[in-house]
Length: 373
Image 1 (tube, helix red, strand yellow):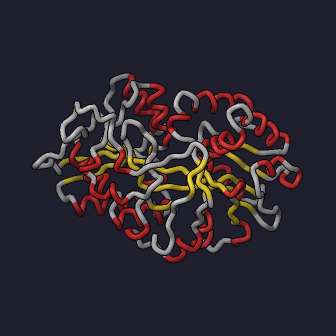
Image 2 (image 1 turned 120 degrees about the horizontal axis):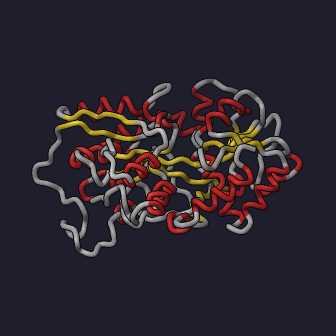
Image 3 (image 1 turned 180 degrees about the vertical axis):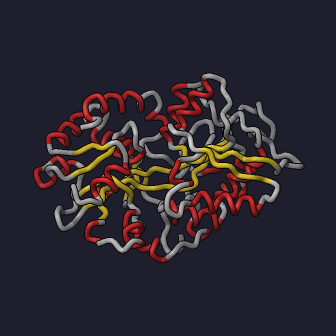
């Protein structure tokens, strides 16, 4: 984006680094100076490229997916891009890999850090998605610092990022200055959150509280939230569109780009105020990778490069209402996006190393007490 650089101070157990660091341990066992997938002299750019992603990338009002398909096929006229929408996200492919079943996909678009952890906690370490040779992806060098997703096996590149925050109605409650404030009487029966086992923002908010309260203190914090009347719904759709937008509560866990959406539809901005408790927001980059058993490897690499191109980054950012992954100089977005998309003073995330071996236990312990409350 022009006029603003979306790089926050990275605190806690934060991700760091640049996309160019994405190689496996580099023991020299692969070709191309230790990188996987050396670039062929005559790449095969014909055939059907199957891209797995989430539903809102393809369906709904003005999603990015149809544009990506049309523009990619225009750039590669001998190729056809086919979307596939796994019902349970990356878990569907983990199950298929365990059963040695056909994956029916070449590229996965929409991987979070926790998806990589889930793969490695379930399958062989570094499995399912292949190590990327970023030398084959020219646009990878334009990815902003801080969006390396921390994968030690170099399987993914970020294509956008969002920040989890609180959205609140200033006519009803004041801006909470800290996470601890949410347990106080001023916010009794105010907060809507999501199931951390079913929802990306719900899990991000849980991890944010773990970063703040510690592994030994986060359940006590959530008990205080529960005593103060937090309501936990199954997913973001239910909590935001189903409850918050209907005025049932004055605060919801959501995204810091909420005002972009509110401005587009002419909503009352007083009901779409952005809060960054502790001057923080939880960074949630989305990544893309290529399956180990991809049948259209060359086209898959071309798609990853295409997704980081100027036009594709602008379309993904504006239609997904997320921030671009590449440096601002390469992306020309609407002035309204620049005005209404907010970045926290400090971006926090719990990184791969801390999630590995812990994520499942943390969410299960949380769900045992709080899911569905």
